Image 1 (cartoon, helix red, strand yellow):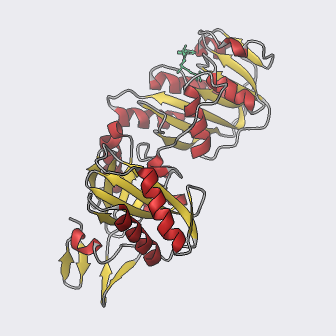
Image 2 (cartoon, rainbow, N blue to C red):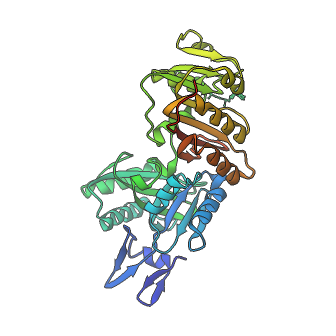
Image 3 (cartoon, rainbow, N blue to C red):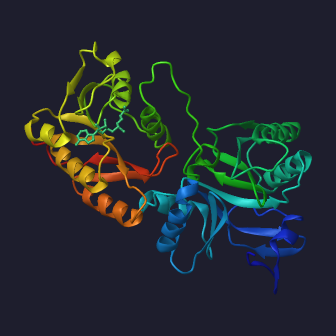
Length: 381
Ligand SMILES: C[S@@+](CC[C@H](N)C(=O)[O-])C[C@H]1O[C@@H](n2cnc3c(N)ncnc32)[C@H](O)[C@@H]1O
């Protein structure tokens, strides 16, 4: 039970949410009583990685912070004065790789709340927070749902109530987000600024649809990284794709106008064979780097190999990159000693690269996507 303080007293959360909603970053007013509160910052992660996300938060925020799981893919972090903005900043800067979405709990309704009750509570939360007239509404389910309705129905009910009150909701791309998560312990309503949410998708659950020309499911990983981190690939130039087969990432890079050196002992999809701007080198990355003389403007690496070996190859690849070149790498961390492995890999990359982002994205399974930029040392070639 969180420590809601009212004068001398401490109120239970359930008592509290029936009469007010925690909003914003400062204090609450409850009747005539000024109530200070700690933000309950809700962190979402992949279900199998939630213990790792909790451990990262505990290590980074220290003993003052309390981190507790509240569902299969969610935890709450609280600490005196801690805000979602600070948690978001630490996730980016540290980086903490397992948290993938943040919101601030504003209300928790009983799991038997009906759609009318949820919609009314959402409107009350929005009014209390004094949100602008247009914001994003994101609804998702955490864990196995026992609700009689799904996220689409909840979205419709809340959007209808808000619309009648003069608000316009979108699914994304607004400055503020109202979150509604159907969890096993109740309906959680959250508010946050989008820039402090880590992801502009409900709970970080990016949904990408399979295009007609898709070559491999691995394409989702690169598309997700480009979208979630808002990356701009160069409009032309040379790209290096290490571990390219069957060629999904190569296809995406070609779609962005880059010439691609696709390095993999395996075969590329035959649809790529007629493209004169793709050079398939049927070699291991190590052998390729020993003989290469080309300077690349971007490098990607989706090689299935030990993460430290893969990182060492990226360090060698840095010598073949133009200053400022972007590098995108998936590190197959497996499931043992994951945090120390990730830290060791990021430390190795730092120097030849500036690490910009590192996160377990939705389409990563037992892997982390790292985005880095070649520092200004000149390429060797
Ligand atoms: C997950 S797949 C890559 C999928 C690819 N990104 C796509 O979008 O289609 C991993 C690839 O790494 C390659 N690989 C493993 N070790 C390698 C090495 N030492 N050098 C180059 N490629 C390697 C494998 O042959 C395999 O094709």
